[in-house]
Length: 67
Image (cartoon, rainbow, N blue to C red; front, side, top):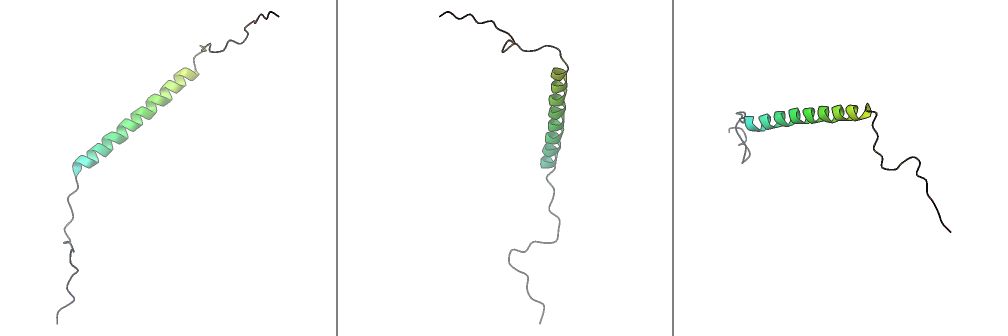
């Protein structure tokens, strides 16, 4: 009597081919995320070192009231 038969749906021992397109897209995505992070940090540093302010609310605004 030979050994037990393999299960149905069992695949061979050959390695499945790797899809290089998916690896290329993942690499490109990583590079773009890295560049976006650098750009964000660079613009934040540029805004943090500037002496200009945005006058949304003036520090002193004289109000005149009449009763």
